[in-house]
Length: 126
Image (cartoon, rainbow, N blue to C red; front, top):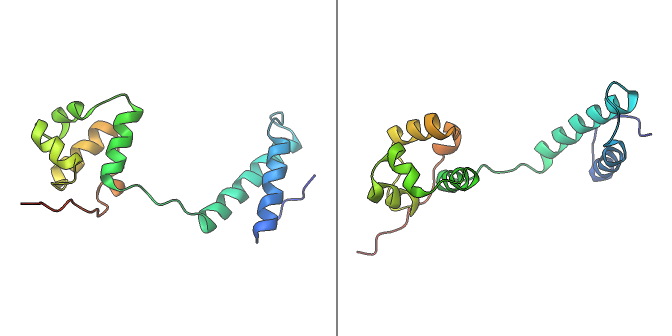
């Protein structure tokens, strides 16, 4: 059994992952389960420092939330505006407004910190 210690390098990280896999089915309220919880916390901290995951841009986030809930762009019409406005936002021709961000946050639960993140708009070819 691996003795818990700080994960300082990739070898420590791999050893912790191997031990987590071995302990994955540990029974609750056992020393093995306690070790599993400690190792999981250590691995999460290491991953946050060394393998941070970038938040998606606002449009990617909106599309993900729609897809994961079985919704379509049409469902956004009651949240952020008419069909044309929704199409312009999703095609990156028009930026989200503060009011749209508020509505998306309150209606779909998309975190505001994701929605306010800067993102690129498509250039008009006019």
